[in-house]
Length: 231
Image (cartoon, rainbow, N blue to C red; front, top):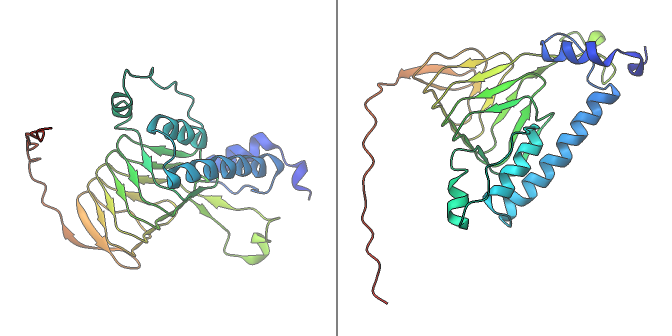
């Protein structure tokens, strides 16, 4: 069977639905190429720090194909930076398959060297912090090698959902189909293979709950008065 003969609309529907589909059809190869180019440009400027926050958000939106217009430019560079205080902040280098299946909430932070196999949707809740070298794999392959068949065979996927206010230590891996509850801490080096309830700490490979988190009232922000030194 030629991969060029596969109906691209039905194949894409199957991919997004988590069903077996063919990833090396011309349209999906082109989508991954687009994401690679956009991701490289974003990562380059993120690493170098040579562009203002507005430009970095614009480049990120190109990666995830978010066409929402940015707010008008503010009166000063500082005020303009403040307009994007809740935009996701992703440090480069960053790699994803498609980009458009990444759904990040407000005030998400992702440290460098993250990998996102977003065959299906990967959702990250607001205020979640992700350490360096973390990977989120929404893609999977058949176990039977005869079915898997290299790049000519089908593959699958399952969505990943991360709740609000989570924290991932460095070098964590999250596998397909996992839902992680709100307020979860994932210890460094953990491999999350199954769903995690709200407000717990999980560690290990496979990750297991080691404690519950007692959630207190948020502490009031401390007001600090800064007095300028005399000139």
